[in-house]
Amino acid sequence: MNLVFGSPGRYVQGPEVLTQAGTYLANCGHKAVVVIDSYVLGLIRTRLDHSCAQADIELHYVTFDGEITAEGIAGLRMAASKVDFDMILAVGGGKCIDAGKALAHTTGRVLITMPTVASNDAPTSKNYVVYDAHHQLSEVGHLIVSPRYVLVDTGLIVQAPRHFLLAGIADALTKKFEAEQCYKSGGVNMFGARPALSGLVLARECYQIIRRYAEPALAQAGTGEVTVAFDHLIEAVLLMSGLGFESGGLSIAHAMTRGLSKIPGAQQQVHGWQVAYGLLVQLVLEDRDAEMMGDMLSFYQRIGLPRNLAELGVQHIDDSVLMQIADPTLKAPHARNFASHSGDPLTCAELISAMQALEGLTH
Image 1: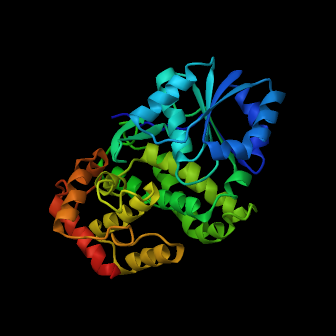
Image 2: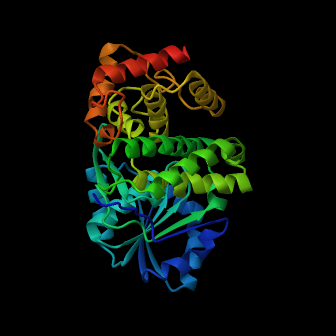
């Protein structure tokens, strides 16, 4: 099987990237559809307009305040079809980034992403998630090519509230352990290919940077001041995490979102919280020692991540609820990227036992 490593064309990070946006867009075309939510539009429009006017870039704003559903994407396509454009600039949080990807997928236009929060690694990734009307995952779309540019203005991101950054940290935290399992099990990465050692190395370094800088960086969130710790952490959460999971592969922690998204309480939580819980279950399945588990649980408690189902918002927990989580989890493609001690595929009973063991550790 071939090894595949994928990445955006160019990743640019700094405190004044928004004011330089026109320079980068000019390398991709002259007319852009900007997919953006109403709040972020008010926040950045003046600066983006000025930057793009200097580069002779024509902007057409299409506001997207809905959910990433088939209907929402169809509405976005309809709005964009009324203008002439040769590139798409997706600006904002995960929803607008994914909406921009969905539009790029159906139109074949060049995609540039500009995150205004670091709540997940969507800006660097080729994947986007589509939900149904009940906010349950219905499909995962895949762009043929990754974004041409990822423009990361840390001066914008540091203004965002702490909970956005915490979600991004949670999402990135899992990547080392998932890439290691994918590699160990002979699994496939997000390109359906042999995992790249480069992806694994990035995922491991991502974890080290998070453990070193998460707490000081979280203290900066919302202050407007970019420190060295904040800058390093954003690179880990957006770039290293994105490259690490796409080229290194995913495993149980992300597979668990398939089950958790069906459970009241858990389904309302952000992606990062779901996979953070999933990581703890994966670590139990790996038979991690008490010292390692204690260290991770202490870190979760300090920064405010869920350590059990109750903290994830699940109020009623019994065997039927655990089965509702386990069954869809093990049907997810990533669940196969796990090297069990027996060498056999994981069973629902083993996954339920791990969830129960985690409950015992945290109550």
